[in-house]
Every structure is written in structure tokens, then in C-alpha cells.
Length: 233
Image (cartoon, rainbow, N blue to C red; front, side, top):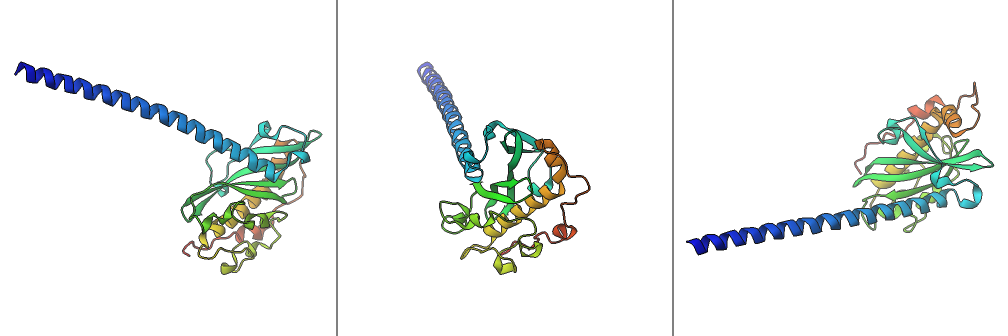
């Protein structure tokens, strides 16, 4: 009996040590993996920033020149919106803000939307998504040039009722077998433009540009015409 008890104790101690070592190994691996993922995400984000506003078009350190803007449910994020600012000779020439399309086919689609100081789109890039490979992933620039179609557009170009995919009466192409993904991106980009125009003067002041008193930047019908098509196809 004594030998059996001793054997059980040894087994229990061995299992305990194994559990501790295994748990520690997993924790260390997760920590290193999380760090690598964060570094890769940061590199991808920096690459996207400079694709939208090339380094040659500004003379500040845009990666470290950030400003907080008012919170908005239109951008689907929590808390204030932190944007990157491009400047030339100290004057703001544009900004890039993070935007979330919450209604992608497989969940959130994270975007960067670049705008000049008049609300014209400088570029849009997807930084993360879980859309279906071969279908919804055509929102990536390495898969197609679809997302380039936003460059140069404004809240009124196209008209508010055309900010949708062609299947729903809009002017943006959908993908074969995948309508929800591009529609979600179009909606998110339109909402970012409405956010910019609605907060135009406050954004200008926070970025260090003079306000434009008495100048309305938001057409009332733009909000009424915000894309609200149900997402079932």
C-alpha cells in the first residue's frame, strides 16, 4: 500500500510539473505570437497609410502626427477617432481615419479612408477582414483594383442615392457571388464622408487649419440618402 501511495504521489507530481511547463510554454508562445501579429499589423497599416498619402506629398512625420476627433457612431468605433495628419510647411493638407464596416459578410471590415481638407477622397484601403477568399477578398488591392474607384470621390460625387452597388441602384460594382462585402465597404466610406462634412469646421480647427464660419458643408439630403439597404444578398 505504501508503494502504491508513493507511486500515486509521484504521478501526481509529474502531472503537475507537466501542466506547469505546458502552460508556461503556451503562455510564452502566445505572447510572442501576439507581438508578431501586432508588429505585422502595424507594418501593414503604415504601408496602407503611405499608399493613400505618399511620403512625397507631405513633409511631416505622418506616422506620429495624430489628432483626436469627435466620436461618431457612423464610424462604428468606440471613443474618439484618432486620425493621421499630412502636412506641408506646417499646414494640414489631408488626413487618414480608421473606419469600420460592421456589416461585412463575415464580420467587421477595417478600413483607412484618406481625405483632403475639402472632403475629397485621397484613397481607401482595407487593413483587415474575414471575408470569403476568392469572393469578398477582392476588396484587397492585391486581389483587384475595385477599391481604387473611391479615389477622387466626394459626398456629392456620385449623388447620395448612388452610393450603393449596382444591384441596389448604385454606381459601384459588386462582385460575382458576393454583394454584401462591397456594399458594406461603400456604406462605410459614405458614412465617413458624412462624418467629415458634418464636423468639417471642428476637424479643420483640431488639425490646425482656420475654420470656415458660415459655410455649410453638409447637404441635408446626404444624411437622408445614406445607404440603408438590408444586407440579405
